[in-house]
Length: 119
Image (cartoon, rainbow, N blue to C red):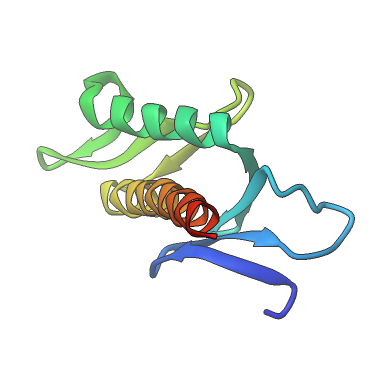
């Protein structure tokens, strides 16, 4: 864990930035959930948040209806070539992971600006 700067995590996954390695790119974050890792820019993270919100509101995204309950949904990744099938609980968890990351990145940016203006 010495090689990463944790940004946000929950029981479903973790988002971090690499401190040093070949994949080091401070403008991107590594989002890990289940058996999946996504290396995302800020724009891709914002697109993913939009896709998550859209999935919550799109009845066509719901799959596998059983006993009047939807067991899974189809979530589009930030790129068009990838999508994920997950339960509603997992969708809520990935939503929390992305929202928490966006909030934390914004807070970090704000605090850095405040620190710089005080010096």
